[in-house]
Amino acid sequence: MLKTAPLRESDLLVTLYTETHGRITAVARGARRSQKRFAGGLQLLVLGRFQLGRRPRGDLWALEGVDIVRDWTQLASDVVAVAHASYVAELVGALLPAEVPDADALAMVIALWDSLAEAGPSPGALRAVELALLDIGGHRPALDGCAACGNNELGAGAVFDPSRGGAICRSCAAGSRGAGIRPLDPATLAYLREVAVLGAPGAARAVDTDPRFAPSDRTAARDAMIAMVQQLVGKPLRSLEFIAKLGAAGRRNEREGS
Ligand SMILES: [Zn+2]
View (cartoon, protein in one colour):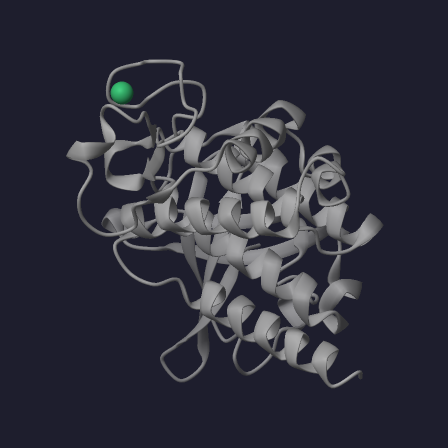
């Protein structure tokens, strides 16, 4: 279960990522009035078996009922965990085509929820999910060679250019102009490559404490991935703005010693 939104007076529009149909949108009739029929299943962080009605003439699916299989809703009291889960839900909506099932995408969402429940929010875990969903959506950023010429030499002078597909070598960097382009430090590149190698969110959290990487590498890697996502989506993601606000509030609290 990825998202719900009010629909008309009494219905909810729900977004699901399903094993059989991929990402779908369904109407849960009457769910704004009573969710008894859906047994607490209409919320983020729930994995369930959803009974879907047939679509009359290509209209929306109808959601008839839910059996909860697993839920991670105990995370609801952790605002940062919920923000990370919401961001990933928004990424699934923005990067993956509707109604194209992909088992890896479903597994990645569940792996992130597991990782949040086991060890809390992690920037490394979030980068792993971003990379995986970009890959599944056909937009894997180039990290091993220049996206323009294939040159493996990505040392000094390399940039990250989301509109050209990722890392760009020094010689090709002159052709990079426009929004979202940023210098690509070798350590930032190493950080992103390490996340890609680790793969799963639970494993990728190792980069959070890896002594080879400084906090500035983490920030630069995040900004590069977000630039890639924004370039593809073409509009700001609401959940990202929320995470940024949480981050700013956290830094303020640290300064004030609370
Ligand atoms: Zn090049």
